Length: 619
Image (tube, rainbow, N blue to C red; front, side, top):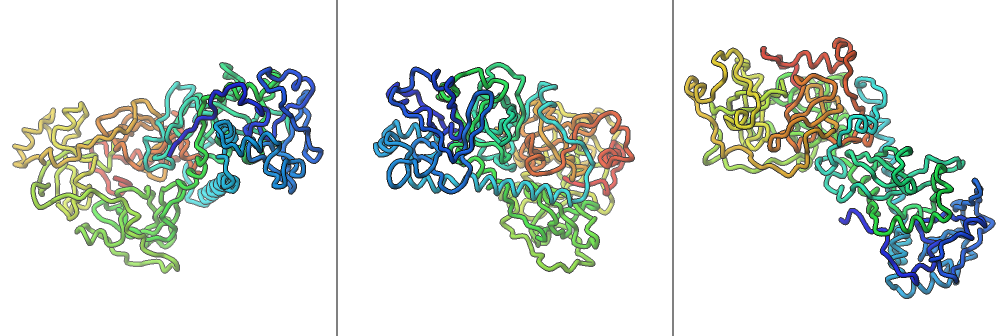
């Protein structure tokens, strides 16, 4: 898909015949004596400016006259230039064109017609007249989805109440950058963000106006941070006084040309209204060679906001109290691809667990039995009409591996991210080899006698590493609890325990070009309290491994996560999906550990002593 398109090409004088009626200016017409007399000398002498039909509403503001369609019957849009007017006043029996000039230009199918049509926002074909309604419907559908998600969030289990967090102000005041949307392949638009970049022009609501109705103007992307963009209205040049932040995926953002196809008025901001006598000429010069969003951008957003998991689907998910086993749970809620799962035995629906639909912690019904994983059968199940097993194709597939030759064996040593203390990479042991490449891993020195705190990782998981990984990459390795021969040396430890290290060739060594950079901002799940999505920063990158710091919290609460983790999201993801975003912690609320669930849960994390399985919430 082509993500951006040229707005205009430089055209000779002879091709500028009807510049005042370009589709991009639909609904905005400067008709006062002052403005018409000062029109550009480049305009053709035989240009005819249509008079204002009496049936169109007229707004006068500071000497300027604006017209726009009222949406009633009897209106027509020129298929060539986009001029909106009364159908009876249009040329020919078909009323497809506003003038003889447009009719001839359309019929010739010349380069001139192609340029004008692209400026207008639709291809010069009769078929396009029907298709141009689709983007608007997509926007309305997307907006309905957005409202529904907000309503669902309001009904969901309450999270930490917070005031609205201003990402734009936060990024500007700290002079930081947001991770690009393309870094998050699992997020909406993650695979089709394309060339959305600084300098791209869009049409947005003009908030700098005194007009009593909603009007629009063209703005340029000055800075990008995830889904959010710092915008500046055309005409302000280097003046940043009216810059504003906007989420590019909300329904009020459109490609240039949308106003033309939708009959919406383009009106310059009040602050600079008298800066130019002919705004149309100004915009043509500014937009020549510039780029905008693709015409199907809003439709793509809507498409990307559809999620296959539905309420009452049954899945197998890790038991948050005993990580060595899985349990059956029902999908209770879906927000932005995140699932609120309620364990099937829960009678009141309070025993729940949050994870993303692509999380390695959820599986199809029957998965545990098929690979030999522990499974807790439901003693009591809720009889709910409509529940069904989630189809197997909805779950993420793991890489096929050959376990018949060299493969992990019981007792092999390695390094692994501790699921009960995600800021630590620990000395660990393969405790059991399962089918399909899965392994049960135990943290040395911290295991329960019955193996109830073993956890399941796939052999290709980016969260397990060969012995020596931390030393090579200057990461602090957490030795077994109670081990006194420090600093820890793998050679000595293997000799003392009579064990061998898992061969390096068995581990995942793929490092994608993920695009993350140190210091980038994002929204990240607190995996020790996975219903919370927090303001966070990438503080370190080791190959494909990211260290995520929660802004306002001490470093001991950091998390090591993979660059492709479905628990990381672009700036603005919470706003787009209607999810609650947790702002950076202040010193005052960090001290209120008894009143804020996040702090209370953090205090239970393993800090060198035996962990409690009850604190486990996510791998």
